[in-house]
Length: 389
Image 1 (cartoon, rainbow, N blue to C red):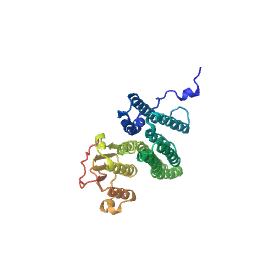
Image 2 (image 1 turned 120 degrees about the horizontal axis):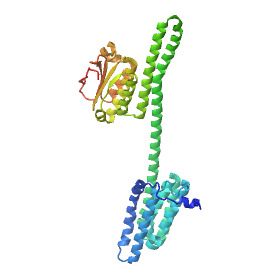
Image 3 (image 1 turned 60 degrees about the vertical axis):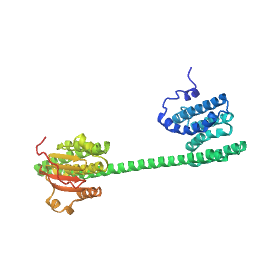
Image 4 (image 1 turned 135 degrees about the horizontal axis):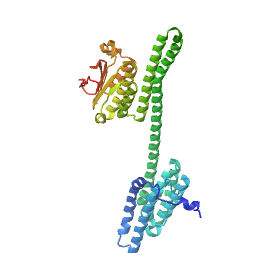
């Protein structure tokens, strides 16, 4: 015989239980313990009465703990709003059952009901429900015994209002977090679009033009056509290297990921690369790591496009990054006049300067270009092993 839908809804109560949420929210039960302790410790109350209050408070605490930990799934298959209504009904019934034991002081259970009213509904609806319910309970307690108005005010007005404000700020924080995540996604999409345009747009355009030129030269100048085809093959290898480097960078968008991306891109282009080990990369952190990530990305792109290098050496410390290659090097005009930097290197220099560092461009011992970024006054280049590894 198959189980009924109702029995299935209440099956496996602890499967999927959120122990962390239950534990963190159960901290509020300290106030319940503090509220009932004087009554339990009062020798004027009979032992059976005191034990009954203790058992009731413990049962309510266990119920509250379970409700918080299972709020996202229990009863199973029920809509969220139905679960919230059942939760409020069960907590309210449990609170009302304390009246024969605590009389007017059973109001100490109300803030726990108010918390679910505040967090279970929208700010406006939750606020209205908390206010209306608190007013009703306040009137009932006042009618029962009007000697403790200040205590009633603290328990039935101050604490529920505080809980409602917590719910408002919690939702505001959640909204802000979602907005930040959406903004981050937009930025990532823009970065991907820009990288694809910068890395492949120009290369594919040139390849298309050269392919058209080669097709026209095949009949009249086969040697020139062959040179154009060879150049197309070289461009395609560069584009493939840049694409692989970009994909790797997207998977690991940090300095370690950038080192991996540089290794993959340079390897695809047939360039030997000596890169920092994991310990050296791990020693770079915070803003330095972000800056070094950007510098290495720009340097790798320039090497793939312009250097004609066969070997690249990258070295780093916590405050210094150095990139050497054995390619054609920088034009003399750049080395003689730093103000003559092209847009790519100019943007790199500004970014380094904004981070409080300095960009030094020179000729490497390998015969090509050297990019040295320092975040201290130490501008002494790192020693480069000229021998191929």
